Image (cartoon, rainbow, N blue to C red; front, side):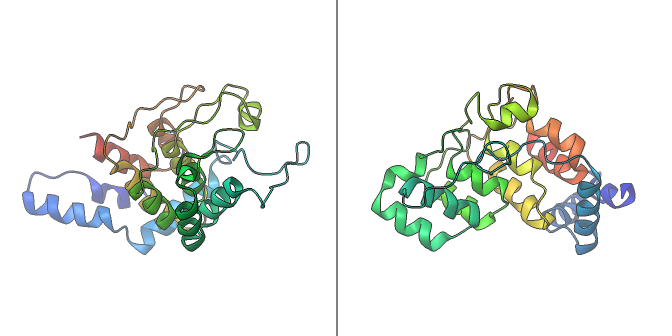
Length: 208
């Protein structure tokens, strides 16, 4: 894996820089497979989605509620439903659940690339933070304030390319704060150091 990652190292030659940049934008299938293998060998996701049901605290979704409809559509990447709902109620863009997870949080956690891109194009806040309480605070033993970039970096989706591109889209959002710190003291880069060398390389690239 280290040999493959070395392909992204900077070089002295401009042509080499261009070639490496192209390789970085489109990771090879072999490298993507290696990323997935590494992620599956690591610890479970750093964050438990606040809207997931668990055995001790089951919260059933009220799908008659337009807010829950919109959040679930983002979680599932249903752009058609998102467009219809937002057309009916523009305030849904900033809507959130009881733990303050927005549609962008849910889309980022689920690696729904098109949903993330669409939400950002509509003006969704990439720095929206979750509440200081909630079930993920119990899981982590701390008070959590998580931005979408934290969730995208820590996602354990089966498709590493979607995760890579989701993180990339968030990083390219004007004004994105890469050093956002949650209440556990972690930045997105801290999470990437533990979970994915390639995502870490992507974050470091955007720091320059």
